[in-house]
Image 1 (cartoon, rainbow, N blue to C red):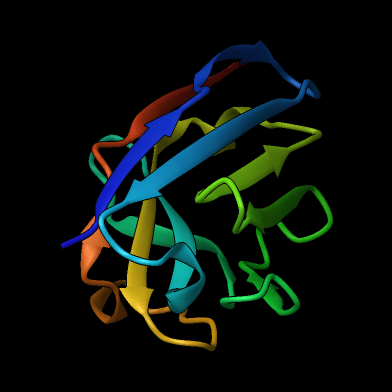
Image 2: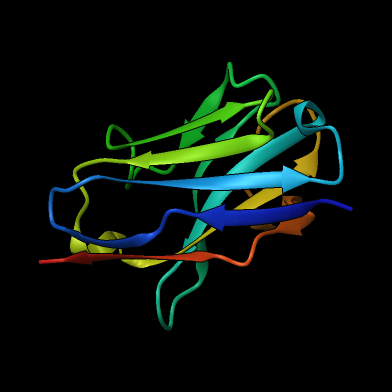
Length: 124
């Protein structure tokens, strides 16, 4: 079983930056593929970014490409999402997700473990 705890959400103005973290426990972190998803009120939980086990391969949704960066520190059992040039439409609860595997995954159904989510609000 894997436990995931997000932190670092908050309120930021348009064009600002924010970083969220996901601390994992319960399994060897380097054996996990990690992803970030987000869910705005009344909408589906959408893919944001994914990273493979080593951090050498990343993938982004078109809506965040060039603005967001996913990374991981296997020594700290933590994944990160750095968000720059934030827009009001980025406002959502951000969830980290994990599954066993060496590659990256973009489908919500591919992930077995989820954090509780952290709120990110971008004001205009």
